[in-house]
Amino acid sequence: MSHFLVIFSASLLIFSSLQAALATEKRTNIIFFLIDDLGWSDLGCYGSKYHLTPNIDKLAASGIRFTQAYSASPVCSPTRSAVMTGKNPARLGITDWIGASQKFRILVTPKNVKALPQNEVTFAEFLKKSGYATAYFGKWHLGADDKDHPSSQGFEYHRGVNRAGSPGSYHYPFKRNKNKTATDVPDFDSADKDSYLTDLLAEEASEFIEKKKDVPFLLMLSHYSVHTPIQARKNDSIRFKDRMKDIELSSKVTIKKERYGNTRMTQNNPDFAAMVESVDRSVGKVLGKLEELKIKDNTLVIFTSDNGGLSTLQNGRRPAPTSCLPLRAGKGWLYEGGIRVPAIFAWPGVIDEGITIDEPIISTDFYPTILTAAGIKLDPSQHQDGLDLNVIFRDEGLPPRTLFWHYPHYHGSGNRPSSAIRKGNYKLIRWHEDGSEEMFNISKDISETIDIGSDQSAKREELSKDLSEWIKASGARLPKLKEER
Image (tube, rainbow, N blue to C red):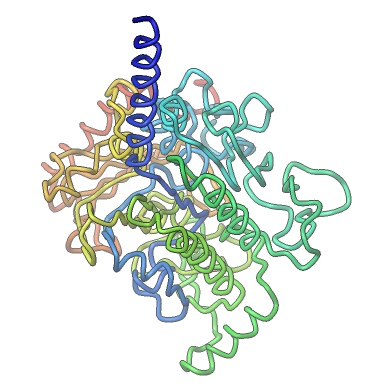
């Protein structure tokens, strides 16, 4: 009898292990491409006539392309905190890029939190606890201390994570100068001397997929590109200079005045175009690895940017590297150019191919969407500002909601402290220096050229009230006059 119990117990153990293995095999892999400073109109599938992005265009054709996706902030660190937590950055106190000098002119700006709070539970932590292999490659910019590293926020494997928001260089040895600085990119001392950072990160990510192909995995490929410094491979840059001639694109740079800054109106920078292409090349490499290993059909792929393109810089500075037209302004601003970004989802068998969706989404939505895709029960108290986009994948609509942004800082783009609200097709921007407000109908005026606030005063008052109530309820900190500090 005891011999039977031993055999029976062993059989149960084997059966349980087999069940666990089968369950593991069915769990969805997740790849998240988070690109830095990539503008809404920088991709072929979003209208660029100069940049070449065949792999990203193919990804968009294989899934959903959102036309009204928004970053949670016009700058990087706040948006990245929103992606990782599902919360509006104002709730976390991360309202500017981490490390920014909090300069003031008319107003004294609030202090910025220096790192993603340790008590926040990232979606990576949830996935790791549920059995996912988790990896982070590239830019983090959510804290410079060891305790604020991705390894403390749910990522068990990481490569190329420096302590700043940009690399010292995109070329080996990925340093700005001989002196060690926060921008130095670690882990690649033994790389080939002709290595290019964007390509190298894609290679590292592909190797991770190869190693973890038999278990569910979360891979975040967070490129430093296309952030400054604008450095491309020489041959790539030459090709785009030739391309300008081939398509008869003028090299003349046209500038338009934007309050305290100047906006580039021409997308004709060959070095920048080459950097965009390097991002596209990296996407192709990673997706190619999925096909090679025959795990593409069990993988959710997300592609987006942390804020709008760098098209606007304050007076006296050289022209920015790209144009966000037809959107107004760019990175650093709460006009559409600063916060409307590309967003693409592909998931064979779950998401239909070639879908375009005009419904607004925002960075905080990635958190609940990823957890649901991984089969993890949601805790609404954590991702309180995000909506689960899986309902869209099931051909259902998102419930109506209002979107908010809060940027109470001065920025090198020329932007000044401001907050914004989008409710339906109406968007209101408030300027904190003088309390003035602008209102636009985004569906009729994507370029935000006509302030309709005076013509529709009731609607303006409604949005203004809603914005004020949200600022108070969210705990968003406001800039103050010197004597009020």
